[in-house]
Image 1 (cartoon, helix red, strand yellow):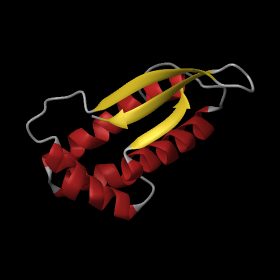
Image 2 (cartoon, helix red, strand yellow):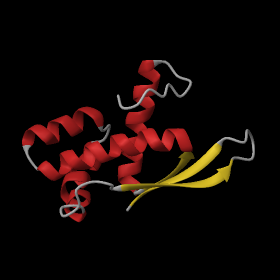
Image 3 (cartoon, one colour):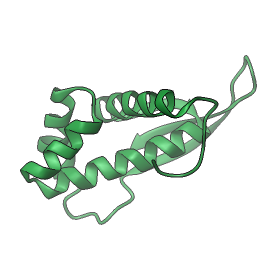
Length: 113
């Protein structure tokens, strides 16, 4: 797991949450969440995109081990990775959008560049 942010969860809950959020993010290309979660999701999504750029069976199986839906993994390897073939990194952007109304948590928008 990248970083040392615990996000208020146990390790198995944190891994499950990150897997689901990375899958949803790669499916839609945009996500609104807290700033600390966005930074964690960004790191994991960039690793998945790097796997997608390799375009071999081993990379596909590694991506499937993390991504929760097979259609998203196929989209990652067929569509998303093609758009970033000439780019060496920095596939995501995290933009702060201010505090959340209920608990004043710092919110951010995570999007594919």
